[in-house]
Length: 396
Image (cartoon, rainbow, N blue to C red; front, side, top):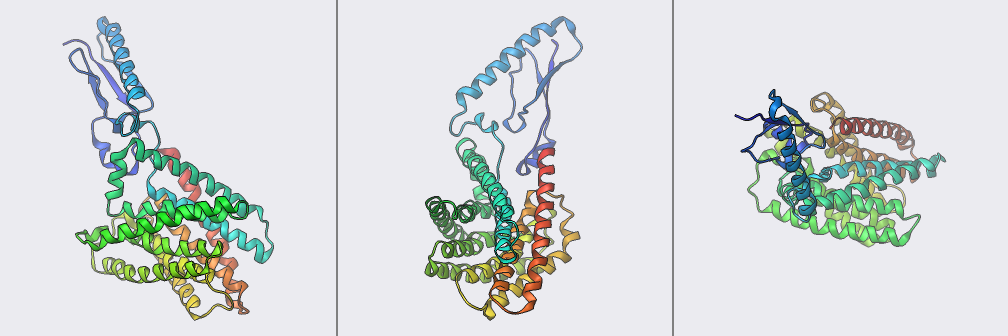
């Protein structure tokens, strides 16, 4: 048996491919064996080490070099649309990653309102919007690149009963970035808003129709179901009001409000009567805060004058959800911190913005005391999750 070379691959697995970690990581090369590297295991750093047999080491090194050159050549020539080899050359971005754009945009809105209400520095809100916009651009490009170069993975995410709900965040995040751009460029803002609103409506209708077809595993029923029709409609209402379309804002609020009520009963039924949520899905419970909080903000955006009982009711239910999530922190934290924890940030920042809007439009002292307290909490939580996310990314 001639001497052999072992090709060792140092691997990093995205969340969607963690079950593949147990597959072999060492491939044997010999005279009779072709070079074969599965695209899931391709490493950026590959090194060859020889087994003891110095007489044929030089010959095998030459063959390994030729095979590696042929492999790199195939990467360059076949790295086109849908190519298996081209798919390994860029970072994977899942649709759920857009949650960090929502959280940062929400916090930026908090600080913009705080600057108006309490004369705090305006630079904080603008810097946060700039950061959110930069992340949105990078994630959008990488997400679209995945559809071009890794079509199978993109379709698998699109057909997954849980992950597919997050695809709508591409449109939602676009509308939030439009709100950040609006003070600087009306044309850019309205263009982003139009794209985000159309994408949100089309995707929400398509996914909701798929849900009505049934044949779903109860385990896949999570708070992510709120995102396409519920949260998407509420953000559309907020953005439409900012661009001067109060009638469209009220229509979107109605669509989101009743979608939320219908889905809430399904999600709570699954939580109360089915098996315990797997640890991997528990951070998604943070999305439970979003419907009442974002709904309250959407309602306030489409109305004027003193806050009415419905706005107070929405805000009160949002506070209740926040307290329940605080009680569940030890249970949720069994899942190590990753990007899924951004799910709570948008609802929390929306609740903070709603409290500021209500404090500015009412003479009562209660919301005037709650608003600064929520601003401190939301800022601290978003900062903590951002630091944890950076550490998580650096370890990958």
